[in-house]
Length: 399
Picture 1 (spheres, rainbow, N blue to C red):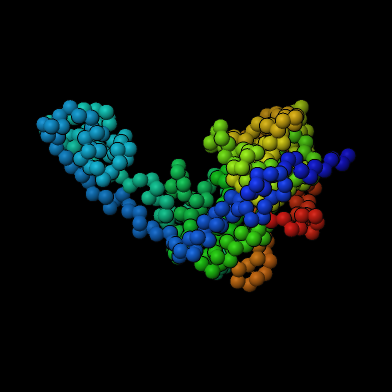
Picture 2 (picture 1 turned 90 degrees about the horizontal axis):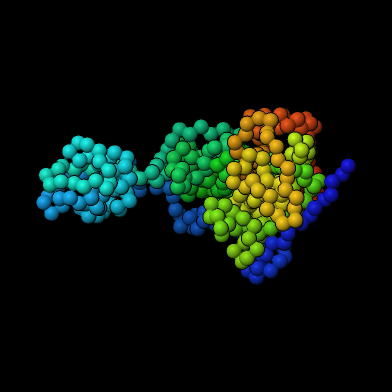
């Protein structure tokens, strides 16, 4: 039996007025925010300057002998006063990591020092100094030419260095693979995927290509299609239209926010199949983004009572009046959100040809799909469904 088609779950405010209505095409989304930043970098001819970040080996050791005036003082306070060029928090990090020795012995930050003791400080480079270091990070290349690179990013790999992930990122791998990438803003990266989201992303290899791809992102002509597994029985197709912003009560999350801070956000989807699991169901959906806010698909599907399988952050059914999805143990272990960027389309910045690539689900997601016993015809329909989608009512949608 055909499911109901749901076109709009909730309205988005206009970017400037905050009133309900259609999304403003001038409002930037998450990958458009990055494109906007990149546009400024390109205008300023900004580059990834690795030389601005000295290696730990380049920092010289510091020594100090405790005098009578410093007798009995806390170790961290003494060092912060004597070596004021470093912050106290940085000095405390060095002490905790064993980089400070008092008469050859590691001490605690709160320990008192005694007159005549010899202190040796071995400065350690801050983690962020590794942000623009070339590292041999494996990159699964789907397409490569002189202008751009398309990779299939595995789950667990961070795209761009940030707090908590200063090394081992896609950017570090790009600098290793292409040393010339250091001359490009963000080493040629023009859009991102969440750490635990797998799938396709494009990287520019020249400044001209990066400028062109940034403009395509701003014009919303880069096509990105995602595959997701969600709890519950979803409608045959629909549009989730709800503004997204940082959750005011839980800053590590994004949320549906019906205030001026909420940015217009739309996700179009089609259901490829639904299977029973326990007392409930699991649905496989294809998603296309009219906007691309941070965690948009995850937030939107949670908000309508269909959170993604395995999502450790967005796992509640929060839409008022929406019956929460009935959940059950998964047939196989799966420790991340079931989301994969399986199709990418764009106009080649040099040839002008329209190109597209597809990447099958990675092994962990495919194992989950197989264990849930989705019919093989559902998987075979991905390409057909996506083609019909682009020719149908949403052919003007951006990715």
